[in-house]
Length: 282
Length: 352
Ligand SMILES: Nc1ncnc2c1ncn2[C@@H]1O[C@H](COP(=O)(O)OP(=O)(O)OP(=O)(O)O)[C@@H](O)[C@H]1O
Ligand SMILES: [Mg+2]
Image (cartoon, rainbow over all chains, first blue to last red; front, side, top):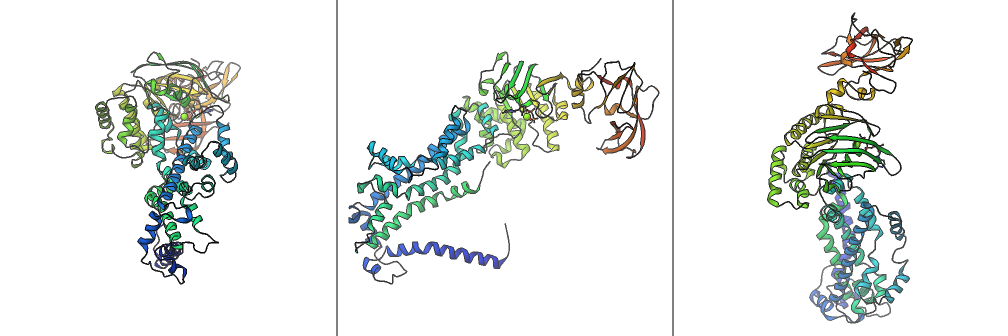
């Protein structure tokens, strides 16, 4: 749609700028707060420009180890969270692709049973099955491990259905042409299905990475050792309502650091992500 | 290069649909056989059974003397061209052509040689590095043919490959397929519902109806001597006039209108006359005459089709060369000679 009405364009831009300001201001404010000393933050009003404590605050948070969260450095927490988010995203994608592949392209006994089993799990998000899952994890001795942190979150009916819908749009003749060209099931998956799905995979990766990054309830349950904790949990632990001396300057630093990786993932994958959402290349 | 032999091939789809009901056919090495028939008659099913994309319920398919019933499509040494091209959208044209060869372990130098050869024949060399999405429909169809050619298979299988093209391109590609098939001399089975395509491409035509073979023969045999009234109606455009006949004592009358002077024989149930065999005017030696009121005149360029109705309500079409002076509403006589009459019995079988 290409319109040439200057006034309409102006209004549209105003609305967009306003929207960006509303979204960006709290983040900017957090960043500003992360560069001031605790005293400055606690004595309002807070300035709107960054202060001079950038290096001190970030250095303290990253290397120093923070008392409220068991003396673990933020670096370690970021690493834990990145491992968790990546493992969940990759795991979900791999499992969903394989199960969608089986359901769409193969005829085997009980195909519909499996289809409905997967479908039913849509009604059982983590929160609903959290106690039995916890019990299983305890029995398997997976408390405070990366496996325990990620495995229960990997199965994904939603992603399976997304891939199933996409696979169903692939013309049957393409599958037949590949059969005639001598591509067996594995070759078909690798040479044709995966390349065709790559924009979908990228879009899903972004969504699932953020989903994994922001997990709260499950990591809270499954980790007791602060060295296995995630950044989101740590952030929560640092804010103490009874204790007056919450290190707000460090809280802000941690908040900024917690935002950065998902933002980077979005920025880096943006091109693919948008393509996957709007384009059907066929 | 190979012959294809179908022996009493049947297909019953799950759910009990009998798509192919016992087809036996010998296709000679290098021959181009065209399967035609109305929609749903089982053409695609038969072709897909030869390709190995559909299981064979009964009977055997042999390619080059080897029964292939249990073989995977890739092991049957065939190549197929689909109606919607079925090119791999994420691969360049070159990769599309190479994929099948790569999977069979053909050396890279040989793959390159075959692609160059095919690209030269099909004039697709300029697009070798483009994706299928960046080609026109006609170019995509050429690439699809290229993918079949580079395999150097024992047989080509075509399932309505030209149906997605516009009329002009279709004629052009038709000629090209014909030329290509002749020069490569590769056994081919071609499915179409377009009888003009069928007539011009086929060495032999197979008319299918309801999963059975109605008639096999050269296009001209089928045109001149259709074995059944179904074939008579299916081959030729405009379709043959088929008039129901009723025996009346010794004579045969046509309740739809028209008179027959020649002795038709008592078993005749249907009388067929091709539109080009009906001529305007009354002639003394005519075996068939009818009185018509012209209902419509279609001018198709070099000739015109005149549609008329008899006083009894029957309908007849005839062909006149060039621009016709006949106008709708006009009354006229048409006649046909004895050789032009096709006689069909009660089962639709040709008599004599
Ligand atoms: N997978 C299937 N399952 C059940 N019945 C089928 C299946 N495929 C085709 N049929 C039926 O088999 C019959 C023959 O189908 P086929 O596709 O061979 O027809 P066709 O001659 O190719 O028709 P068209 O000219 O429309 O392509 C039809 O009655 C069709 O409904
Ligand atoms: Mg068909």
